[in-house]
Image (cartoon, rainbow, N blue to C red; front, top):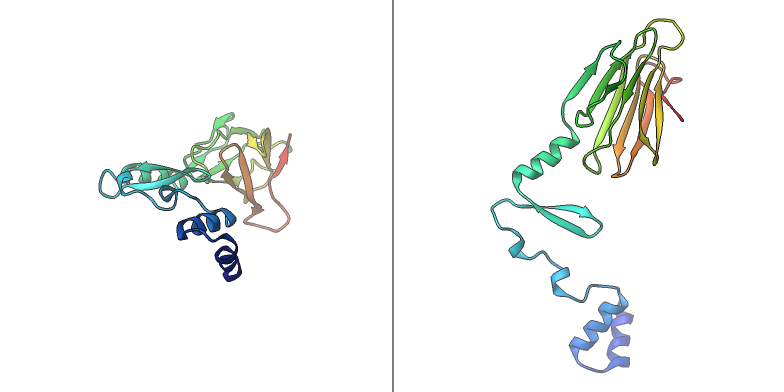
Length: 185
């Protein structure tokens, strides 16, 4: 850094403002003071929040709006009993506990509402010892429509919404180390 500044002084001449502008250009820094700090005029009420709405973009939210966003990340849980086939899971519920009957059950996972939203799905009970008792969760995974198949009690999936599709953060089982849900097309 000293060398860069020294070169600016010896090579460039000019005013301090010109040298500072050249240093900003070399270091790829913003040239407008407005982009370096948050304007006080953004806060129009006490306790306003700035929330990222994209890369380098922010929107102002009230306390109540910020609370709603945070609640969507970790809200309630739901439990869906066996026999309720083609059930839509609540994306706002952090935990969905599913059970299947001997014929298996189908579930739909809608898109998330907030980037970073977490969703955990846990299979509480598989419907007996018969074949076809799996719980099939249909949703947007890895950018395309697909299925996440649960075969055994204790299997779980921890998912995160990235704004476009659900990403699997963890697939496993609370009961053993050999079983985990699997993706299928």
